[in-house]
Length: 262
Length: 309
Image 1 (cartoon, rainbow over the protein chains, first blue to last red):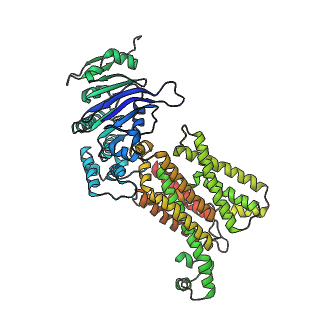
Image 2: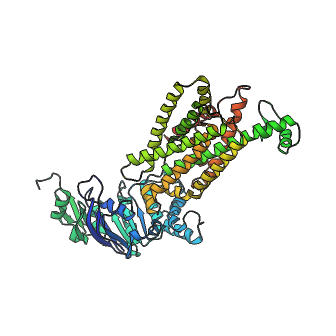
Image 3: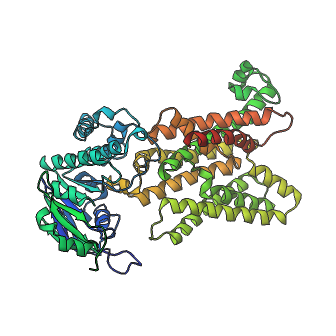
């Protein structure tokens, strides 16, 4: 379980705190979604987790261990993160790339053991990229690349997985494939925390949604509790209706054409 | 071996072997042991240092166009050497030391500039690179000013040095360079896996437990140390640090530990070959080594750019 409690992050020169007292938990076995408008603090929380942003107050814990008390290497054996942006300057073999997920376990000199190779092989299979293992990373489609990145995170063999917008730029089929994958990973016991703008997909797949607005938790709970038209209109500043997905009955957000005066 | 054999005075390979072992014609022994061999060794070391430095930098900066001289090292080292020339220093060791100190000083200035420019207290590697370019440009301006008010002999010496040359090779210089390269190159090889992780970007590196700023700065310093040592020993030998890593990657090497080692070997071969060309193409005149590597490097670089496009 990853738990954020009373987390405050301030960036210099920004009027308000980027994250202002956020508390929620992403338990093992669950897919927890972190949503909210642009600039609401989602990515900052991810950066705080990997210690690229400093906490002013509050704490982040992984299974009750304070992240601040773990060394960066230890942290990387507990939680795997797929950041939003990643430009690999030089192509490498997919298997080698996924193998870098073992770095936290191997360090600078240790040679990969049979268990490291098994972890990589597992990760390739779990993320359904085994057939791509001998390809170069620059020969992958957008959807394949995202799954390969997830495989790299899975090779870390952690108890928690955090992803920042893993389906940006993907078409419907690839987007669905990623959501199905994350859902099944959560069902297998992993704590999955997903930052996503895709409210409708999140509403279908997530066990709970945490909706951020201006650095605070605006509302959190099950998809049915969070997907309420009045709240979403106020948070996004755009008129919406919430209907029901005709196929599966999940709450579905439909933004309207022209904003009324709110 | 061939590089030792060929020169203004050709010596047969058999005679080279004999001379290396200390027997044979006394002139040949002198040429081989005191002139050719140190020169070939120095050239190889310069190439190895630049190749390793470039391979590490390109990985850490995730930029295939990065090269050691961009760090401001070359400009700083040139300032050091030219200052020494201008002050009338003639001792070879003193000029080498001045160049080395100048190069290292430039790196620290670049680090300080990057720290001012960076948004946080920690400077990211890209800011460092830009700071290096700026410091290098400033150093070049300083050289021009210094040379404008110097006597022609100083200008000639300084120019020759800036064009790069292994002609002044001697054993102390080669030995000193070997120590620097083993130390700094060894450091890069030691931390090579960190460079693998850094090449994925700073956020991903952080998620894998690598402090991207600290690791980036470490690579920057070690690469700069390598470059400063080579510049101090042989002046500016351009393009080696840029093109050699690409050749190594073309051989299918990706992980930085083998990549750095291969880049060192390829760099060594390239510079020895270029130096051979420099001293044999226009006998009895010597061509500047830096000009030869640039003449080889530019077309290669253009081909590379076209492929990338």
